[in-house]
Length: 249
Ligand code: SF4
Image 1 (cartoon, rainbow, N blue to C red):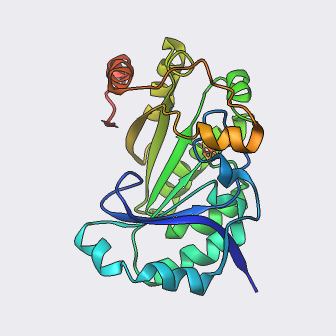
Image 2 (cartoon, rainbow, N blue to C red; image 1 turned 60 degrees about the vertical axis):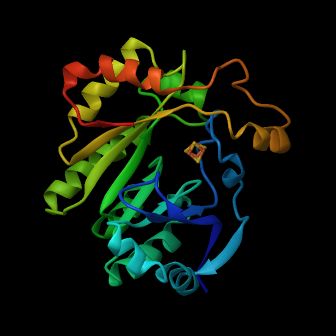
């Protein structure tokens, strides 16, 4: 029987998509970002195992509440696409219930998996970590070519299939690492080219995941980097002004 590994479920999420949402954190992620505050979700096949029906039954009881608050369900992690079959079946099931569905993803996955989930996804919340491939490799365990290509692919498919879905880009502003002019300018240009764009969401870097790193790996690699704050986001916002983008932070 098909089952998925779920790290945790948050029933009153206000940070991961519109309205009040149930956020389901999938277990497993291929990126291992040095700044990850959920690094325990990276370890595959841990957490609680659910069938599609069990997970749906567990979250559906909040349906009335979501409807009153323009909310829904956000699939996050970890990385939901690490369990593509379970993800697909679960999305399908949620859509039968007419639930607003957002996927919070790093989108390092194969296009065939994207194709299957596309018709059910109302909001793609996609994280861009770095646009320079070398620097992306320094920050994560992966190149960024497939990720950037997949964002363009999703955008193209939404248009071709006349779907109502939107793309939100999430970008973590890490002082001295991801706030330099060249990157912000490339980010502005890349985001501007997305046709089905909802907004660019800027997030301030936090170190609240540090303890998990110590516990799992015995060290935290960004020890010398300070916490981010609203001032950092305002500076980045200012740099993005020429692109005239809808920005949220
Ligand atoms: S993509 Fe997200 S969950 Fe995966 S390692 Fe990076 S920050 Fe963590």
